[in-house]
Amino acid sequence: MSGQLKEVRNRIKSIQSGQQITKAMKMVSAAKLRRAQDAIMLMRPYALKLQEMLQNIVSNSEGNIDTPLAAQRAVEKVLIVVITSDRGLCGAFNSNLIKTAKRVIREKYAEQFELGNVELLPIGKKGYDHFLQNGYKVNDKFWNMFGNLTFEHVKEAAAVALNGFTEGTYDAVEIVYSEFKNAATQVFVAEQFLPIAKVENEENSKLKADYIFEPEKEVLIAELMPKILNTQFFKAILDSHASEHGARMTAMDKATENAQELLRSLKISYNRARQAAITTELTEIVSGAAALAG
Image 1 (cartoon, rainbow, N blue to C red):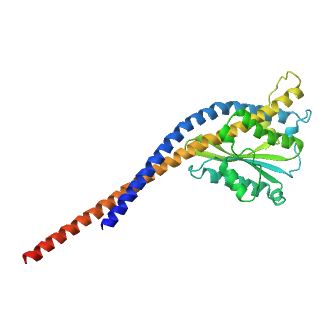
Image 2 (cartoon, rainbow, N blue to C red; image 1 turned 90 degrees about the horizontal axis):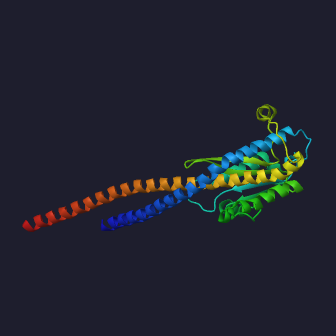
């Protein structure tokens, strides 16, 4: 009986230590989430407006300007950018992103994948490790992006997609990331990055705007397009970054609650075992005293 009590005590101490760690990680993630959330919330309206403007210009150009980044061609070679995290302990965050990327390959680019023409550009160690270990064709230059998350560094990764598409190395570029909604909600999306998607006629009629271009339209668009696409790329990374911290904070909060439930159960078991031990000892004492008296 004493051995059982010691085992339960050791389990209680172990769970209490783990609970302290999960509490601390939740607090750290909450602090990081605040900064990451502020960054994406300030960035998103600007990025969405630029994206709308870019799609509007491309959709209304009607072929009278040269827009190589919007060129539609037969898809033979594909680049898929997958934005995961560097660390785990964030629930199903990374596995959902990896599943989304695999679903895109399976549903849209199965033929290209069979021919070995699908390349992955993982941003985040978890995605990089998974795809490398499973035999995918991987670009290993930017997986540690979150160690230096600046716009200039992100531009270098975006340039791989932009230059690759312009030079014909890739015929399509997709981004798989987690769109941040709130700490408890992330939406895992696969978004076409290149070629720039044109808005359908019905939607286009609603978005159509008469822009005045200064300097010449061709010069301005050639200058603006890469900058707007860099902004879209940066937005996707900031979205995933905030989603990661939200997912980790939620996971650590749930782990802390589960530890509390387990502690409550173990303490009940410990008290019952202790009461049983005391009862057994009292019974033995009374029996011994009765035997001596008899």
